[in-house]
Image 1 (tube, helix red, strand yellow):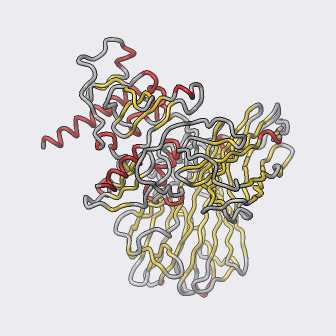
Image 2 (cartoon, rainbow, N blue to C red; image 1 turned 45 degrees about the vertical axis):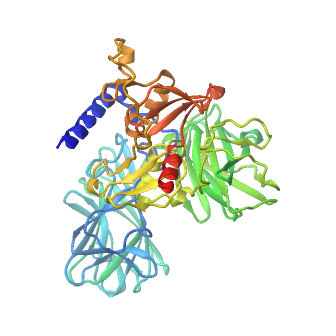
Image 3 (tube, rainbow, N blue to C red; image 1 turned 180 degrees about the vertical axis):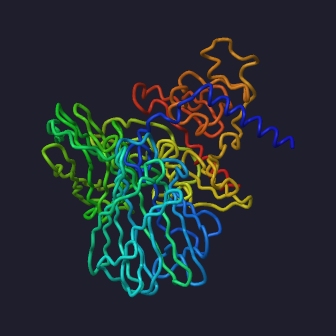
Length: 584
């Protein structure tokens, strides 16, 4: 009981601090803007089942940007030639609902005058008989996109569409739902069976709006057999009208706007390529994508995409290409620029190798569609491993100038940093949305199941924890209190609270500590209490740096980097905690 009261007190103190200190902190635009960030081109629901546990669904299945819910009957993840979602209507009706993260709310952000929703998926039927339907679901209204009809016919609303399907043959769906403001919408349905394609355009009823459309329904009627679904995707886009009087965009990318540098992290060599897209005195560039071709880069692996100026997102990696969206709402406005940094990991100990990195820029404006081939980037790996070891955040320019960061890695056992593709699916969304490499760093381990029921994964700067008991709540994934566990908490640094109104905003009675002036802006902008927790020590000097400990992190001041984005950095507590646990 006392422990519960203590936890409740800490929670109330934390909530009070959130209201007093950072109010709208979490609304601060992220410099690392991913495709599932609201207000850009949001991926609302993404489900691939390759890492899902095989077996019937007894609880909501968490997928990358949403969840799959068994509503009735037999719904399971099965493994045949590949792992897929299966509904089985053999013994009774089976229904799976597929909801994106904001369910039961409206689409993220204030709905614009017109909304376009893109829906994709791959489906199959075990037999060619009357069976499952798939469509959009809004309250009590269902709109069928297609059904596996009788006699091997693909149908829509009971009518054959002119396509047939075979047992266990993939049927690919691409649908575009247009929801204009103030009027009824329509749906364009494209179906591909491999043997043929059909496109239908159907009206929607008024019950489907940007505020009500928030889930899909996959249903097999009783006695109909088994059906599968895979690679399900729902994306939200703002539908914009072309501005006829807008001048053409003026996009400029000179040779000087593309550069590269090497970086070594934990003995692994990375190549960073920076591209600056300048928009001159012209109109808007809409649907702007930087497309990176990976086909000729066999020994290089995509590790990260970050935005140094402007915002954007990684839309997808498909057919050997990375599609990087540029600008908010996929628009690059006149007299602006976006600078993107692409980090490529060198596989193994490759040396004396030469690569040609090819990129294209696609956008449309009032002059039509544009496709610009950028100057190829020639990457020559060094013949000997002469690049000094640097932690995350440090870079080694090819010209040999002084690195921009000098944070010393924690001594101890040499650790292997894993690529971001090894981030467990339960932690991937949190890692992406809350700061990515800058806040958490690279993963150090695979997910670890603990005896207390938690699943954890260590990163260079943090430990992410999956709490099954909190499933379906905002507290399902939490950050470990590493600094507290490592013993960095100290007694209160102030006997009485400060009297200044300004200082009082940064004082936390729960721990008796004040956030030091150099760290306040960084603490607030990077997530505040949610990411770092309460201050648990006063500022102090360690290894020539001024540092301050928080429940979940150590912030470090680097005076030699004053005026750069690296003046304040997050210490490698994840490395330290994992090494200590490994030693124990």
